Length: 242
Image (cartoon, rainbow, N blue to C red; front, top):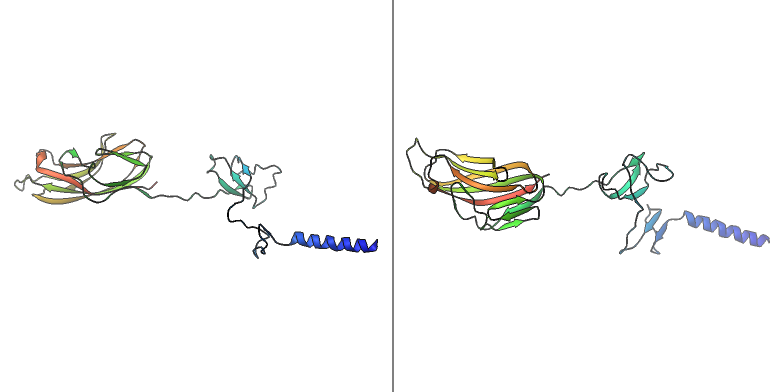
């Protein structure tokens, strides 16, 4: 009898010691020296309990222990998004969402556009574009698919043929126009230009709603015949920044 008691005591002590040892589930190798529990598998993950948290400031779970380090997967997208949340204090700390902005949504490359007469939308039909799903092009019009804040940079080249005396030399203008609202958003001007080539840089940052339409235009000062200048787009880039 005493022998059996001694054997049972030894087995019990060994078992308790084993419970306190580090564990590596899925492998016979020793667990990481800093880990009490390690799970080894190159094809599977760990699935946390899915919980509909009501707020990041409320613990919610049964028992209400408010234990720091407890982890759940929150399924309520209305409180900063669905993600893995660790408990902290009396609530939860959400996993920060990494922003992908700024993002280039359109860039012109290759050949410049064809020339367009003054007071006409500048040619975008013949401009090779790399364009994302956040913007579309139809003819010479660009349309925003996703609302946001965008930065628009362009370079417009003008060829001026009009000649006159120094008192009536024209002003050449390149501009961005929201054709949905017929609003000129930005204009670049060179005043009193004799015949020649001119580069007009455009840079504009603004908020656009989904469906807003954009065109580039070239113009001469009032009273100047439209056939005395031609404009082309030599560079164009649109970035979403917010």
